[in-house]
Image (cartoon, rainbow, N blue to C red):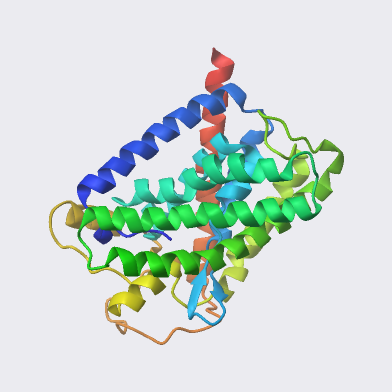
Length: 341
């Protein structure tokens, strides 16, 4: 669901940049007030895990489409919504800058669509009320799946609305929304199941520490074991499992292809769009999670599966490391300022 710049006008993209920046400032203030020392390394390693997990697209049966984990709900459950938003913003920024996954103008939209709805709508208004004081079972399943579905539905509608308001694409609102919402319903169910799996594994490491309070995240983690577990998972997923990602287009690409026969919007070679595209091309040293293609390479090759590629492995490991450092430094910096007061 990563938007490209070509779908957005500078006005809409800039407005969402401002909204996301304001939310980040608010979250930074709240993290500074509440962040526990043990959560600083967790922001880094769970962020790295989400980065690598997003590399694995899974096929949506009978559609020809695929989806991948958003991760906002998992982060909110494990870190609380404010630290989750900061961590997911780190993931999306690294993806846009170094892997050209999502445009630079669209970065504010992507942070809002993938971060705000799961962290500040789905988690507090759906997941927590359904879970209540339960520690798992049917309530965990119901809360996770419903929260993931609604968070992703809102995010998908945000993509449609931002695209329509921009007025640059040839995607009719009615057709676009009628394709985007159902395909992201299926992706949301898969995200809910993945959320249950991750939270259940984490819970088993320290079941006595579970606590549902208004101010703290759901799971009080055993820091050492959690750090090691998420770090190992990130290395395994980024280093090898990412080869097995589905080659089918994701939900957004699939919807665009169904309407106009092309998975990606045409690049706009003028104005802000051209300048930002040039900046992204210079910075993104592993575009599309692979080594840059040689200029003489064939323009298009049949998609291979599994894609056993050193470039993909390097992308997973390097990207995960950058996110680990960036999100960890964000938490460390906020914690340092709290200590200095």
